[in-house]
Amino acid sequence: MSALLPTPIQTAAQRRGRFAFALTPRTLVLLTAGVSWIILAFYAKVFLVMLAAWDLLVLLLAILDGLRLPRPDSLTVSRTWLSVPAVGQETSVEIEISHPGSAVLTAKIIDDLSPSLIASPPELPLTLWPRTASAVRYSFSPCERGDHRAGRIYVRYRSRAGMAERWAFADLAQTIRVFPSLRSDSEDDLFLARSRQIEMQKRREQLRGQGREFESLREYREGGDDLREVCWTASARRGILICRQYQVERSQPVWLVLDTGRLLNARSGPLARLDYTTAAALAVAQIALLSSDRVGMLGYGQAVQQRVPLGRGRSHFRQLMDASALLHTEPGEAAHLVAAATLEHMQRTRGLILWFTDLAETAMRPEVIDGAFQLMRRHLLLFVVPAPEEIMALVAERPRNIAQMFERAAGQEMLQRRELLLARLRSRGALTVQVPTAQISATVLNRYLEVKEASLL
Image (cartoon, rainbow, N blue to C red; front, top):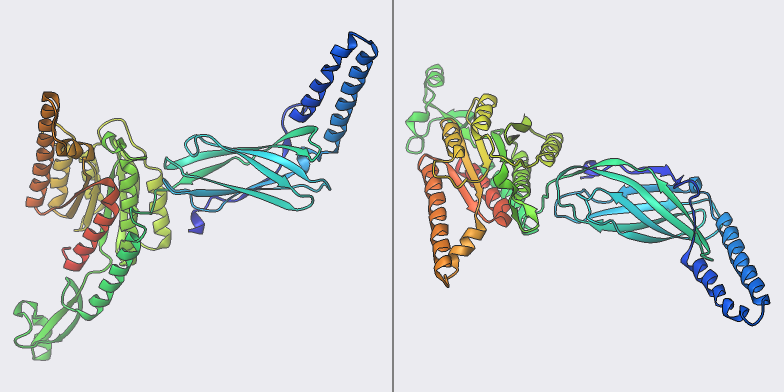
């Protein structure tokens, strides 16, 4: 995952503002303390002189303390990302500052990150030791995928005396890409899926003849082989019956189709539904690539947003990660028929299509169902929709008045309509998944593995 980490960046600090110098609260308190001598000045004018001398002394000490501070351009500031920025996961950042001076400094640091990364950047205290690098870390959880700005780092530093402070900034502007989360509801879901995939691979090596991919020829065995598997051309050449031997298919095409329309912008907990579906799609991509399948991705709204052709390998998974990170929801309904036509053009042979979408509540048949029928003529379709958890909770409650009774009846009608649409897809050979958003990753992984085990392609 190191390739997904943002690049560490380092630069020399610069002076912030024309003077970049300020008195500290300690100095202001000392100056204010001298004002109390005004009361004594009513009795003796000498106290006015003492007040002026006191304030001049405090200001002189503050100026001398400020001059002893290292210049801003002598500070070297760096920002290092310790973990991959991902939606809903804790991301750690380390800020390191070094200076060549001989004094111990105390500093306060603010990292100017985009509000889409962190709502309010914290003010971080840091002690700067002379001629060495001092570091401070902080963590946050990004809430939005995509490319975001990381800007300047602002530093205010003072000596141990604390009479004056200097202001500086380091221009560490860079673009940070926040990826979908690869962590499912349970930390063990992905590990269990991988273990199941490895176990399935071992069984495949032992169980020949269970798939549709030609593996080799062998002599026909009476009572154990089907005559439909006899290769008559090879039998004619050898003078005995020769049977074809098959193995479970490898390198099959798997397409991840992601709807980014308005329905996927609805939030389920802290994240949008699109965040859950992209995380589930990437989890399936990981397992599919480990199974030697070729994986492609199509993300669409009113038009195609991201398109990744079929491929395999670690570099291809990085392409899938980048494409899914850049998907964004749109305010309108997605063009499902356009997506289906695009996919049919890109994939001519039979493949497995995992379509992550949702069903609009309309009186007519949703367009996405027509798109699904169009793809099912050639491909095996796994149709994935998040369950309407709010409606299900409403239906589960017992109504307490007439208004709640009508709301519950409307909810039951909506759930029944969704189930009828999914049943119509199943009757034509599609596989369907409708589960709460938090369970999508684990459920879709299991269904994909079931498809591979049953050789449905």
